[in-house]
Length: 276
Ligand code: GUN
Image 1 (cartoon, helix red, strand yellow):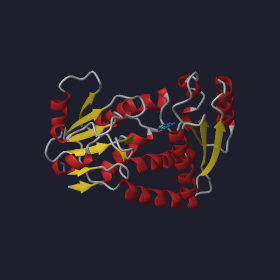
Image 2 (tube, rainbow, N blue to C red):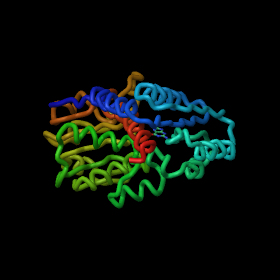
Image 3 (cartoon, helix red, strand yellow):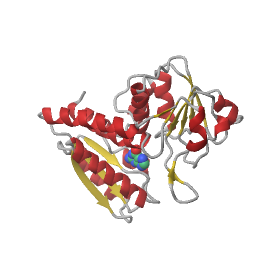
């Protein structure tokens, strides 16, 4: 059984990006917008800014108060949209209650949509003409590629159908010629479907939801969840301790997919800046 080391691969990719940025005449700029003071979002944003420093991406950080209006958020995004120094814009989600995320995100121009969340970037992904792709699913694909996993004709099961993770994940796997099943809270016979997976990707946000009896012997298990267990310890959507002995490869939490998400944000920021 291999434990997929996302932290190590992430470091390697960041070093390569750093070198590329150093050699380039263009200095990529990423604006990160946080509205309110959700503690988890604050940590994510801090880590994103840290990654920018590591790679040599110029970061522009904006924090608006919890009480910010829709107009204030959208005015800031409009300003960043027009700013030539800013190649990528990230609006940290979720927004505080009362704000319309969809309307706000629509102010981010497609070419600066480093989250890959816009209707156009999702449409391009569905058409197998990927441009800027959502960071977490993209990070999973890079990990699988680095592990030498051949997806062609394999049964891939994605647990979760969120617009930001589950759906783009399923589409990327489909584009790589896997046979993809997407499961969600209304799915029947979930265990049987999971047991048939050569590659099982969990993105449901429920601690240790995937148990050993749901996993096929020798499967590859990718855990996208970041939760806290009953003792307040960080854990994934997979019951790692019990599942690990059954699988051929598995990502740990933390240290698996998580570091790749932020690395892919750097990758997308560079891609947007260099217009690759
Ligand atoms: N909140 C949690 N994950 C993400 C992400 O990948 N992008 C944005 N914008 N907000 C998030």
